[in-house]
Length: 257
Image (cartoon, rainbow, N blue to C red; front, side):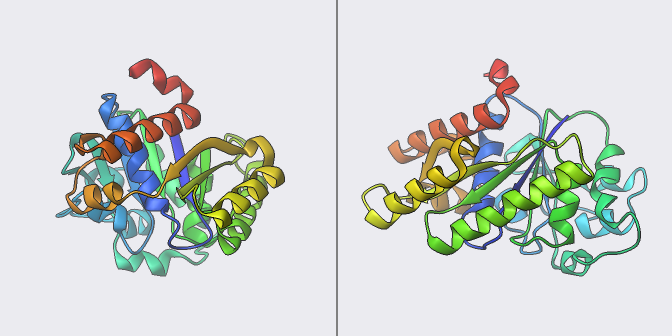
């Protein structure tokens, strides 16, 4: 089961938007997707309409025993092909080390789930705290989201280094990080310069695909709809972009299209 940790070291770069865009691309292909929301803000949970769960990720991580995670999984408003392990604000209290297996709690919890998902997407908080470390220990892939700004690029470098540390030290199943540029505006000179700087610094680690800044993203999120169901020219453009991101992160999933 492929698990993708979507992370950033800076808030406001659209990390949750990318998580939901990937979920939308997988949904369109008929894949069964689990979105794990580790961000205490719970934006992914809200965007997927995940309400009424008897347990949240706070409960799952507090007691990663068989059965707890399965009871916490709920359907999204997109239908039962996209399901959610929802966040709550108490997750903030889990962002510190708790015992010798602290960073393995999510991996243990997901390992207890039935093997019914084609893809797991883990929306991390914008930090290198214990929740992000849990995500990277449970993941097979890591997608670093950044925008073309000075501070965001510095955060991307920290995130790539963090992935390498965990990959080499404690999770040999984790592939090297990929970086995706989000909220790009090619007509802005500052964006063009920062994008060039990032590509020169990281080379092929940076995806060729760039996700443009479009109002259709926030409109679809506010309506609780996958971007692939948003009927507008901008929605169609973004759907194509997220298809390409999914093809890059998970090339085997192309067969499902």
